[in-house]
Length: 177
Image 1: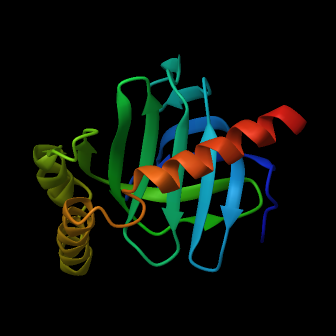
Image 2 (image 1 turned 90 degrees about the vertical axis):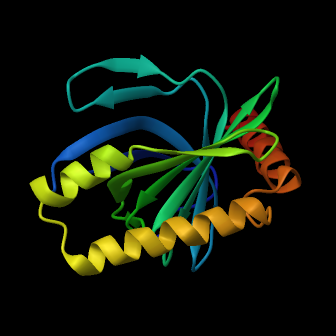
C-alpha cells in the first residue's frame, strides 16, 4: 500500500514479542520511494504502552527505510539538528500506520555529530527475555556499526541540508493541508 505526500498517518513502534511499544498519533508524509519513507511532525501526541501520553516538543523529520535495520528522527531545535536513531526492523506501511519493531539500542547524535549509544543494557536484557535469535542479534550489531559509519561520515540522512529541505517541505504541506 502506498501513501501520498501530505497524507497524515500514525507511527507504531512494536517490541520483538509483537506488543505495541509507542504510538505517534499523526505525522505527515513528505516522500515515499521504493527504499524509504520520510515524514514530519510537530507537537504530535505520543502514547506509551504504559498509557503515559505526551506531546513532542519540536519539529521532527523521520526517515524510515525498507531495507535498513534502523530509522532516524531529526529533531529541528533552535540550537541545531539533533538526531535520535532507533535500531529497528525495516518499516512496513499497512494503510493505517508506519510500523516497525524497536530493538532497544539507540544512538543520540548532537549537532556537532558527537554521539552516544544508549540502552545497551536493555538490548542485552531483551535478547534473553524476548529470545532474540542469533540472526537478529547479528543484524542489529551490524546495523549499529553501519549507522555509526553514516554518522561519522555525515552520510544521508545526517546532512543538515537534507533535513532543512524536508523541514521546509513539511512547513509548506502544513500550510496547504
